[in-house]
Length: 280
Ligand SMILES: C[S@@+](CC[C@H](N)C(=O)[O-])C[C@H]1O[C@@H](n2cnc3c(N)ncnc32)[C@H](O)[C@@H]1O
Image (cartoon, rainbow, N blue to C red; front, top):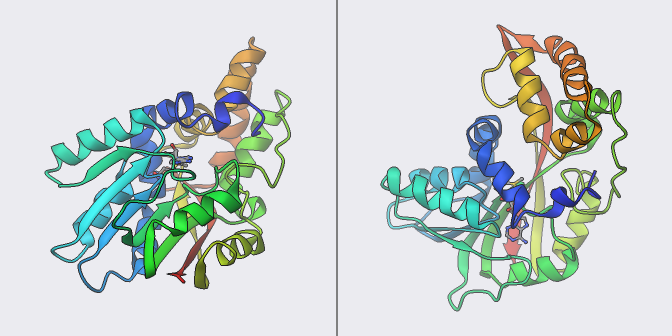
């Protein structure tokens, strides 16, 4: 999956694609915010950074839930997403600074943060050992972090169903399991090792198992459209294939999703790992 050019290109096309589907994406991912914020232990006003913040959904949620006096900032590599986040924060009267930054390489601020959070943003580094070592410097010694990543693909049938449906129609390029991508840290020992060798300590993993909607309250056919259009590079592969490829995949996925409709809404099992701990 990750050898399609669009997949790693968060700074440009992939960031724009995420922005264009932001409402559905954030409805889907919102259930992760509560356990993620809980893992941050916001027991006093802190300076908090949301890294790889995307469209700012989690950043806004933190701002609304943090103790009075907290300072919240968001960082992302995509200009389009940072602009969307700024727009949302202004509209919601939330005083949050958003900046375009490659958090894998950017020099840490002079005043590092006391809390560092990321919802599904730490899986895309080209050089994870260097990036996590850099990221640890964004946190004051003793400061807490909480990073949410997907568990194993087999525990996330929302994605395996889409893969299966699309691969009945086109060949999906094989992803290197250790390369950038959604399930890169599904085997928890990989990220655990990286964090421990990068200046983080007392690392714990909170398992979150639950059901997620496919882009909000959508029926099987609507959810199938959303999933194919929004996730990974499925839409690009199917469009490239041409003919009836897109419709065939959508039909196949609709049939799969219809087995998971509850009161007209597709709800799929998901497994998320929340890595949390401190900077040494
Ligand atoms: C799956 S999205 C998650 C976005 C957001 N955290 C959320 O949960 O809605 C991954 C995000 O990581 C960002 N990203 C990827 N690599 C990055 C990097 N090196 N520095 C900063 N942001 C990065 C992308 O631009 C994208 O917004």
